[in-house]
Amino acid sequence: MNATEIESLTAFASQLADAAANVTLKHFRQQVTIDNKLDGKAFDPVTIADRDAETAIRTLIKASHPTHGILGEEHGREMGESALYWVLDPIDGTRSFIAGVPLWGTLIALNNGTRPMIGVMDQPYLGERYLGFPGGAKLIRHDEVHPIRTRPCASLSEAIMGTTDPVIFDRETELPAFKQVRSKTRLTRYGADCYFYCLVAAGLTDLVVEAGLQAYDIQALIPIIEGAGGIVTDWQGGDPQMGGRVIAAGDRRVHEEALEILSKV
Image (cartoon, one colour):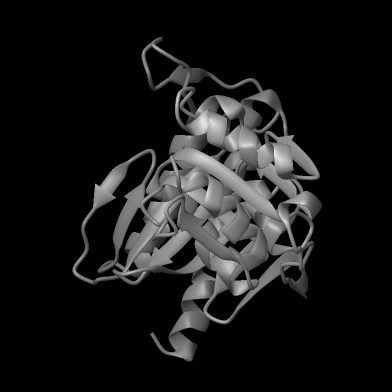
């Protein structure tokens, strides 16, 4: 993709976020029926807002870019004629959504067949939209555009770390490693799902460590972190785009220190 195409598709990704917001905001902090994807074995909630928001995004993609493929959390994979495909999580953080906590987000990525090139994290209740693209990242807050950059952080001892919840880690293998990283940080916070990654990109926090992710949980966040000057890998230092265990950091020194611990799992 050339620069003009990237600019056009980034603008289109923002339109997709608008379409999702028109759905999600109608249901946020309202009484909605909550279904459990796991049939009572555990709790993985989904609502009409998740399903209808993804449908709204898919409808726009099919109308404007019918050759593009789509991978979404709620409605699965549709192959396209083009190598380009969209990766969608209409509400990342459904648990926060149903609890009325405004730290969920709509995740939209455009993958060129090799890597996610464009990423959007939209939190419409707060009026914040983070966009990442080759060579940059920005925050649009209440129609004002702010370029964003990660901040310097020399070591874990100076770092603020976030993760969704310690229960996402395997108790026998992943959790001890996470606790070892946590013991070295200045501060660790929980419960912000995709929003944590954008705080790293904006230079407000320094590190996110997670596990058990799917492709649609991480692909939109990779261009945002990388465009802001950060780094995202798996726990072995490899490509994180298919999910699993992920480390995102604003400063490579912090990433390397965390990786030294986590790569042993």
